[in-house]
Length: 204
Image (tube, rainbow, N blue to C red; front, top):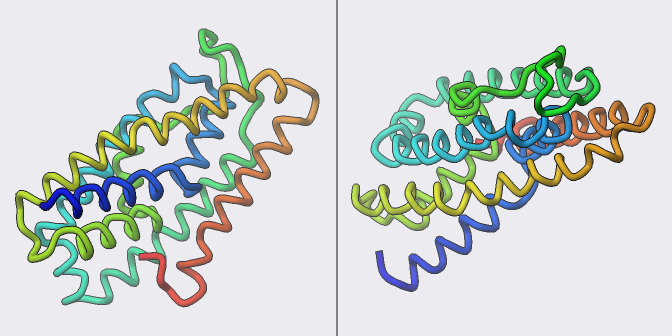
């Protein structure tokens, strides 16, 4: 990968990682509801899981999806349904508790849940497919690994910033009814991220 291509990809990775999407909205909600310590596995699962997904897409999954379109349609339906389920869970989440208090009625995403979620996340698919299509000409294995590694390094601080933003809002959200409004707003925004999938089917 040339220096110019690397610089262009790094900029793309930052912009695509920092902008709103299912991962970032869910991490912000998790930070607000569970605190940063309990959200760390979620953030790590997003970054590592997405980098692994990008690698697998580059080395063959993309070709498989193009060869068998019904698989892509099935994944789109499953992803949309799961996102709607997560939106419901966020909208009905319990009030936040102290990070050291284990009595919360809900649970944050685990590391492996966050990794698995990338495979039904429309934005993650868009990011991975765009990166491989534009920045890995010929699907060279070395370039694919560079792309996955750069994504991991850039993505983690970006998604963590959203979790920290949620943590920063915890004091404000302790007011009566404030958390419910926040969670409903996060759930609504999560549903909005389905628009590319529902309208035109271009989500992934």
